[in-house]
Image (tube, rainbow, N blue to C red; front, side, top):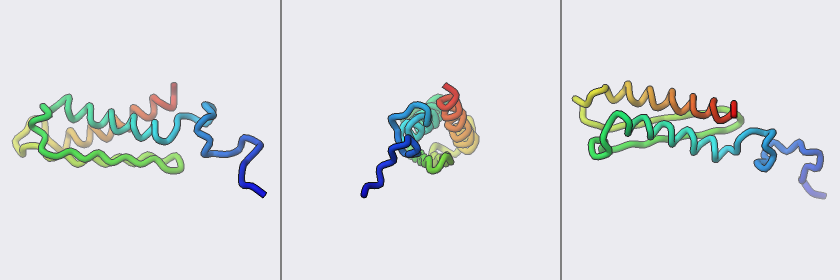
Length: 98
């Protein structure tokens, strides 16, 4: 006896485009979008630490951005981190809409 689904009902089947994008593509898209926003606002040499953590499990996207840049950086670090999280979500929405 095997656990292989033969009726196409396997939710983990990344080869079926009807299931939407693969989880790793969702994670990569979100991470790239978040990083893009950070480096749109700051030179790479200004950012002393950047950690973008993305998970996508059971259809739920979670994006955390930790950004360490000078306290007097303009725009505000927290505002940039929030924008990065929001943009990551929008990028994933666009990925699913395509």
